Amino acid sequence: MGLIGPTALGKTEIAVCLAERLGGEIVSADSMQVYAGLPLLTNQPSAAQLARVPHHCVAAVSPASEFSVAEYARLAHAAMDDVSRRRCRVILEGGSGLYLRAALGGLSFGTPPDTELRRKLEAEAAGGTRGLAAHLESLDRETARRVDLANPRRVVRALEIVLTQGTPLSAAQRDGLWGGETRYPHVLFALEAEREELRRRSDERIELMLARGLVEEVRGLWGEGGLSRTLAQAIGVREIGAHLDGTLNLEEATAAMRMRTRRYVNRQLTWMRKLTDAVRIPAGGRSPADVAADIARRLI
Image (cartoon, rainbow, N blue to C red; front, side, top):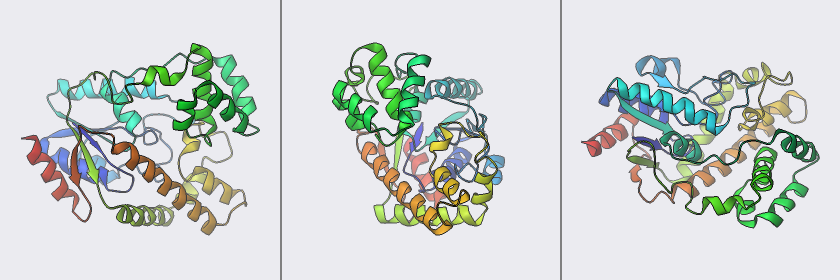
């Protein structure tokens, strides 16, 4: 089964409670939790949660490694197959629709990387993404509307694919991320809460991360080539990095983290509304154990 929901809603504890009820194990479908080195920033399960239920695809990759969604899919499939062989329930949990869909299988990952072309595009992106974004829009307007044009890595990859395959990327994605067959039969549960509650919870989580030592955690990997380009995109890395560099004070860095998190939650809510086959589970104002019991009853 798949469990998906927006950031800061408490998915991890809900998944742990559900796994305890069902005798299951958790496979993380999170693009950042797969990296080791920044457990606070990526909101990885606590030591207590890891002790209660086995987790997979958490802290599995070096923070300096470039790790693609295709590589994640192979890691997740191996974990899910292993859990299934032991006749345990697989609970796939995360907030990234792309990673959840990749874990379920049957997703095309496009053309292989063109190292030389990517190097040229990255060199151009170092001066800003405006020119690359305009180029992408001229070749594939539909993809340009979907891609975060402020994210150099995503603009470069989208343009690389379009230039390599010679046709718009959107032409191969008409069915959408959730179209087509999957490798694993599944029931998908979507956790929901009011937007204001999500905003409050995400703000509280950022404050808790800071209180537990987020600045020192980022300091340990900042500025020494210790972060992959992917992990460097995690919310909080560049903000706390700017604080460490003296560009932002801590209050400004915190405000920037809050704003990025709210925008990310809004994007999550937008694509979650497209999951027409998902079972909607109200999670706002309820304990994780209560939400888990609700889901478990629907699985019987």
